[in-house]
Length: 138
Image 1: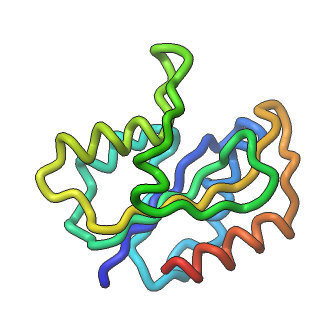
Image 2: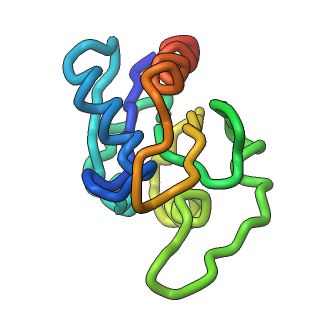
């Protein structure tokens, strides 16, 4: 099964750097196509190449440990964005599922706990566990 791993997050904003940090660490080491999209998951629309599986790696606020969500676990979430300048990755996925002709069969999220935008609070062990979960999902 062809897989695309999408890494989200800022390069400079505290815990939101987790996705970028994993992208840098894993560059060219996965048996999947990898894309870093910064904080704009809408870029998926232009770079998607009909992979059957997409895995999104991102920092997630409000969780205590690494999480893995798949398909309906993602699309049944009710969370709404709080302002017009920030749309959650979940909402973007819901929009893309409606507008893309060939949306992937499998969509996964590997979430990394985030607590602070000003400084990094995750450690190497957290990133190691995220890599292990990502490898399991691939």
